[in-house]
Length: 54
Image (tube, rainbow, N blue to C red; front, side, top):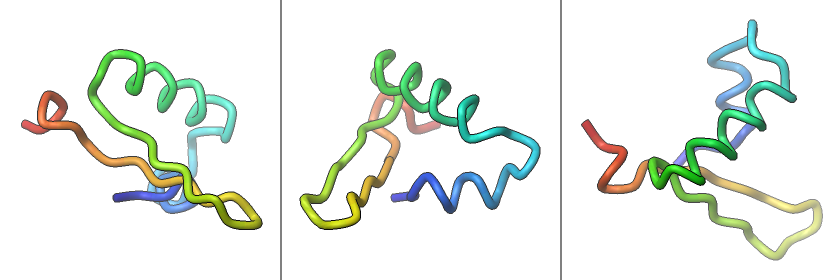
């Protein structure tokens, strides 16, 4: 699982907006899942689905 901030550090050339849009698109296509934890501040993690794994 990866948090958005971890992904941003791995791809510093990508803006937060672009990263957010890409994550949303990958989720819509069933390649990744998003898990939201009910904490303050909100915590979100992304992981590959079986369909998204190589």
